[in-house]
Length: 111
Image 1 (spheres, rainbow, N blue to C red):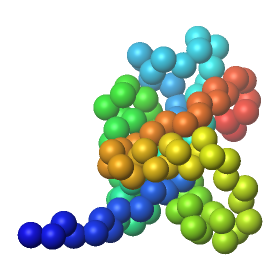
Image 2: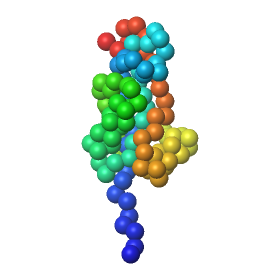
Image 3: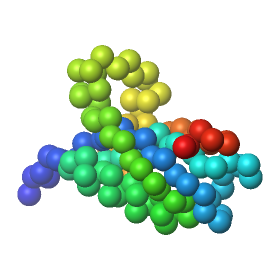
């Protein structure tokens, strides 16, 4: 039986998280922004999976902004370095959510 081609795509998401006990953020941080690459058949599924995994990891997701697939981002003129492409490919191959970058917020930045 031939394997069906995967309908999975990788979406670039930025997730804002608030504070929660055990979240691993710096002591003075008020929250953080996470750049994630998440696989899904559509962006809604990628967002749901990402939020579920981040909750399991003791973080408090507040807001998710989607930036589309690799193709969509290229069409918008985004320059995507090889390291980012490699992480996207890994997310697709592993059907995973990969947190590529975490930027903590301090003070009034999240308001």
